[in-house]
Length: 231
Image (cartoon, rainbow, N blue to C red):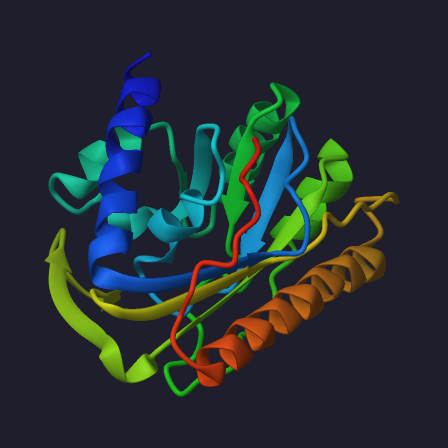
């Protein structure tokens, strides 16, 4: 109940922020399917999880680096909102939590790169979590490609439990997202070469969506090109 309240309280705040501070362009190649789904995006900034979450109308659950759960206030918000901490060396716990949510028909957001994209641009090789989630749950994967103005990124240094951490925050500027068609996968989640191939295919689609977002940014002023959102 608390997580649902926080979601419906925070979503209009995020959307208002995006409307006031970001020049957002969203293009959808199709509507998102109802029920369980996995939204998978590239990760140029620390703020991406909040902006990507705005794409879905229903409550979403994000797999987020456990470091952010240790940040005062933000960590409390993330925990009470039901988001999933990804703890180094214990990724299986996060996978299990995400699978349980998908089994309940929920929407999960994952960033297959597993870390922030290179600051100079481009993408990190995908990790296999997105593939295993798709194969074990049967839920479709929705690829989302993000492009922003890298020169407007702010690197912020913070100390979390005695350890220095760096975040890459996007406060204002153009922010484009392209949402691809759902991808469906069947196969053996224990077949490692196949799992790797699925992860790479998902990342290929994310990369293509990100390039479309970049192309729109260079075509002129950002505009909202979104179809009506569904679940």
